[in-house]
Image 1: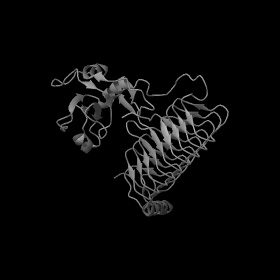
Image 2: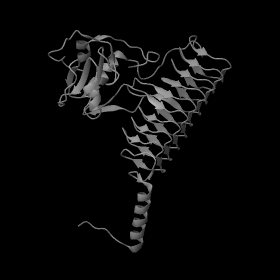
Image 3: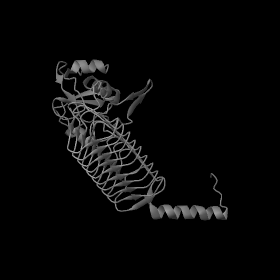
Image 4: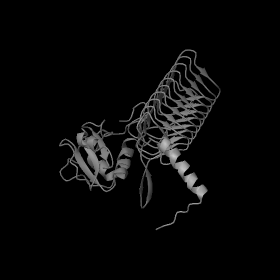
Amino acid sequence: MADPRFYDNRGPFHLAELCVSARLAPPADSNADAPIYDVAGLEEAGPPHLTFYDGRRNKAGFLATKAGWCLADNRLIETAPASTVVIPVPSVARAFAAMAARFYPEHELDIRRLESAVHPSAKLGQDVVLAPGVLIGPDAEIGDGARIGAYAVIGRGVTIGRSAEIGPHASIMFAHLGDDVLIQAGAKIGGSGFGYSSGPDGHIKMPHLGRVIVQDGVEIGANSTVDRGMLSDTVIGEGTKIDNLVQIGHNTVTGRHCVLAGQAGTSGSVVLGDFVIVGGGVGISDHLTIGDRARLAGHSGVAHDLEGGRDYGGIPARPIRQWHKEGLLIAKLARKGVRFTDG
């Protein structure tokens, strides 16, 4: 569910109203006047909430959901719990995007008029230093001893812990930061994720109503970006160090004390275990899990889950000894002038 510090819920809405938004008819055996109070993920949803299941992942979550209503692909045959009203739709993502936008029409950016650089409702601790041009939005909270660089923007409801340092031109929105966090110049924390539903008439952006949680002792390098989650949170674990020009996709969760080198990137919903090391230029596909203390060589491409405690390299990433042996074999064959032909 969306954090009220960041998002204003315009609900509740009757089921019939939401169905009209998505160009649907309410299910025949449903109460069209039933009030729906919010949208939520499968695991977080309760009886007053609408959720969705597209059939690709998390079947267990669908079967166990406590949501009152669930959008589901009309080709699915799974049975939801008896307490959940399934709303069959041709495109789950598009229907959910339309309905969620009714609850949160201003979800994309928090843009509002400020009469002063620091909103009167913002709370600043002792010995906070603000450089020229800093903007701090409503209900933001800055801990003791924090230092905020020139022209940084701290959005509505953002919390920043003690002794944090925020570099010039950084932007922090929809986020909670812990103590002793260092955000280098130009970093962007809390932008919406790159999530779309594609169809014959183009691409519809999915609403991103989650947050970014940055735990204690994290460093995020210059011009790096950390996208907020869609319905759950993006989490950067305690002590993690992120280099310059790194992209962290929405709903990604890193463990404690991970290291991500420059120009690495994770797609959405990646899970990194504790002490994972990601080399420069590594790309990680969406919905993958990397085990504790795995190490990825620079410019590797990760296309499947990797177990922890091992070193990997190549595209697709595989155990590094195997990658090295394959490279040596190819080089040996090339020196011998071996040619490969079809048939």
